[in-house]
Image (cartoon, rainbow, N blue to C red):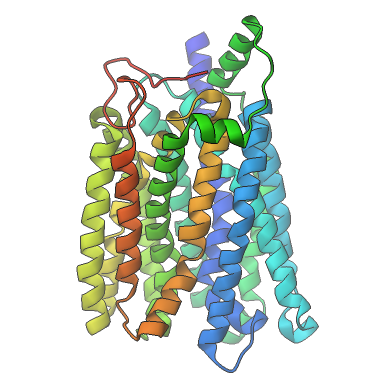
Length: 445
């Protein structure tokens, strides 16, 4: 009976983590997909490229709040538990999302409009900052022995669903509304619907138990009469530098690929290549849905053959494909070539599947959420949030429509360097090699 109850709770945790996290990332996705219309409404300028750069800069600047959110919520989760942190985060995200949905435009209130837009994005960024580390920790700490890659992959399933739902919403609004109606009120619809994040996510996460591994960690600390030690940055950086470096580098590579494909590429296809936005959005939708399945398969594979055996080939092969396919697309833009480039991003699903397990299992339980959250958000801020802005600038500054390949190559090199430098502390740690039969990753205290 106890085993049946645990299996039911595991399903509940997977569902609540996946749906709640997808709802959080949905609004991040929509902001990027609607960058073209937002640039005209909130950053009007004589040069459309200048408006777009300001919009992408706002998109990127908001990521500055994410490391702070990751630190605050990571410390909170490592002290009070994963569940409590996740409930607070999703409620806060609803506030920022609701503000985006009701903001007046520049034409109505002038300079206050972009400032309020930035405020809403900062609230969203602060909330989303702790999501990855705490949700991933919750998933792998509920996982049965030898299945952390599988359970952790649902973190990335939720992000794929978010990109897919966002793309589907954009397609539906573009097809169902006239350009005037879309510019007037249609763009607000996804953000207003996103207010449902609050009650829906709160209900789902409130019904979950605290993770058994975190409960065991607290019980062992109490039983051995260990002093209640606060998690500090000094402790984290002095005791776990290689874990921090490996986490940062891997996320830097993954997030650069993710944001180039999901946020930059659709806008780039329209602005630089003069291809229909609808076609780019449809390609993103299909690839996102495919990656939701591929991520799970890759997570399972990493449980069997090791994380690095999955991660390294995915980075190398994707970089080479991106180079070849973007060169062909820039030389002769067609929808078919755009879709081929987008299809190559299924390798992002292969990369993403093992990533949450790798990012969290290499840290001890007591600093797991803080370490994973902090490195994830620093990498996303530097390599993801600024990716649309940097790549737009690269194309404009060099005059080379294939310039984004340099960004992808650099990001992939960072990821490979982090993976090559990292070494597990114990032979049983599955970050680089498969688990022994029935084995489990270390949970250093």
